[in-house]
Structures are given as structure tokens and as C-alpha cells.
View 1 (tube, rainbow, N blue to C red):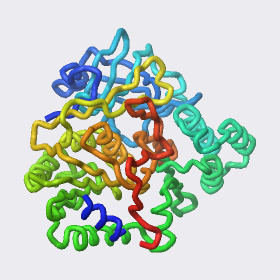
View 2 (tube, rainbow, N blue to C red):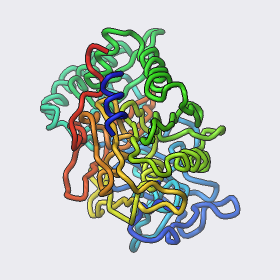
View 3 (cartoon, helix red, strand yellow):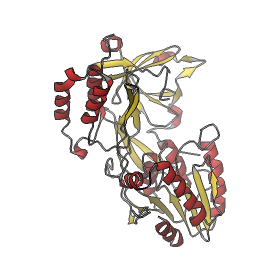
View 4 (cartoon, helix red, strand yellow):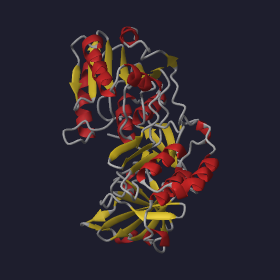
Length: 433
């Protein structure tokens, strides 16, 4: 690791616009503490498996999959924060989002809740197993990429459902059902007979090597941080933004390491704190021959945040990627853009360092930067988990999330499961490190 990073150092996103139209079209869902009358009623999403009942006091979220429907068990009206804004997109259809211009979720008005949403049939372990199968059947996009015959998997589960009598047999059945889905955005967490059980696949070669050779991943990440500060930046770096950003300058090369793309502020927020960090760093980068933006160990965050950071390197508005929910019939893929920041920018050569540890919003950042003519992607293929991690908490208290979206670059290519390839191949984390 040290040698390859040293070589790269030595050798070498105010506005984020994310929508089809201007953010003025996005209006708050709540006014004076109540849902605006225009959108009160019941709505069903295209893709994503949501039904929402918009009562005057706020949204009530339900999850639908196959023949099943159940209220979100988390006890919050908007647990994922997607019903903050809305825009009319046609007769009887709206798009909800977490902030103006952010990722949009298209819903159609329906006359009433589906009858399944008020079904009081007990959630036995056997029924939970069938629900998980239905969720993946409706929403998961990548069975073929992993070589999985999903219909055969579901048929095998159905033949064994009578034997799923307790939480241990439920977990074993789901582990068999989902085996081989090496997706960093697929996770299952629960408990069985007093012990925690979990499926957390999709680590990628480097992190699997770390676990096998070095033990806990956190120890490796701490050593990685020390090496950046002590060796790369020679003890003159700045460890800021709640430990999520490290930056400095080595002679005429600027260096900034984005360890996450969220949580930069003291309250866990981000953009204002990020702007303060980048203002200071970009002042120090003035006149630099090049800047390295290191996301080789980035653990993710949000698309909007990734685009906000990328805007610091943009000369003009450019299409970064498109996204669409699986099964979102009649919905055009949403275009997401990098727009030049009104704050300080660096428009010289930028080298984006990435690896198979780079995941989720870290990959979105790299994909966004690839749209800029002054940026070059260097390192290894990213993890291949571009879709948002969609939360599907189960009625028995277990936590499930999965990928349920398709992202494409401006040429229409998807890198889900495969990872975004670099333009300059370099080994970032040699297996001997």
C-alpha cells in the first residue's frame, strides 16, 4: 500500500442539480405541520415496493411485495426521509424526494390501501421466508450477473417452507436462498434463539484478504489512516470533518482523502461542514500541478453529497449518470448532473484513486468525476454496489436491505456487480500489505 500510494503522490459538488426540471418544482410535503391537501390519500410506488397513506398528520409507510403488504415496523412516519418534498409529474402521479432535486420516487394515486396491507395473518417464520423471496423477486436486479437461477431458488424454498418452524431454520433457509449474491448492499440482520445472526456478503477481494490476514477491518482502517497521515502527508496533513476527510499538500501536488461522503458536521450533517473543509483545502491547492482525490477506502454516503463534492472540480454542467428503480414502469431514468460549484474550484488535472474497497456513494463520486475532462480514474475496479441500499425491515424485527435500482453512465452502461474500471490501472492495496 505504501509504495503504490507514494508513487501516485510523487508522480503526479452552490449547486448540485439532480432533477429533470428546476428545484422550484419540488414543494414541501408538510405545510404548517400538516400534509398539503393536494397529496393527501393513498399512493403506490413504481418500483421500490412502497405504499404510503398520506394523512393530514403525515405519511404512513407500507411495504408491498408479491401478495404481501405490511406496515413499516420502525415506528416512524418517514423512516427513510423520502417524503419531504413532492412534485406533480402528471395526472394522478407525483414524485417524492428527500430534498429539492434529489433522487425521485414516483408514486401513483390509488383509491385505497391494498387489502393485503390490513391482513392480520400471523407472521410465522415460514411466511417471513416467503416474504423475503417475494421482495427479491420484485426488486433485485442482478441475479443473472451472479449466475443465480432465481426461479429455481424460490421453488426450492417453497418445497422446504413446511420445515421452517423457528428462527434458526428461517435464517438457514434465507442463507441458502441468498447464497452467491455477493452484493455489498444486501444485508440481513436478526436473532435466533438468543444469538445474533447476519448475512453481510459482498466485501470484495481486498477486505476479504484483510479479514483473513489482519483480523478486524477497523484495525486495518486505523493503520491505513496512520499511513496516510504519517507517510503520504509526512505528518503535515489535516484530519478533519469528524475523521471523514484527510487532506494536505506534498510539494506541488494536492491530496484529499474522502473516507466517507456523509457525516462531516458535528450533528452528523454534511454540506455546510463540507464546504468549510473544501474551502480551506482548495485555498491550499491553489497553484498545484495536480490534485489526487483518494476514495480508495471510501465507505459510501449519499449520491447528492457525492455530486456536491464533484462540483468542486467541474467546469460546466455535465451528465454524470442516470438511475431508475427496478420495475418502475413508465418512468424515464432520472438524469443526475455535476454542476460547477459557486465556491472555490480546482480545474487542473485531477487523479481519482479508487479500489475494490470503494463502494456505494464512493463509486457514484468516481462515476461523476469520470464525466469531467480534467479527471482521470486511477487504481482498481470499484466494488460494484451503485444502487442505493433499500431498507426493507421485516415484520419479525429482522433488518433486510438490498439493491433495487439500475445506474447507467452517459453511454448507457451499468457497472453494478462488476465495478467501475479505472482509466489507469494501478495496484492500490497489494496483497502483501
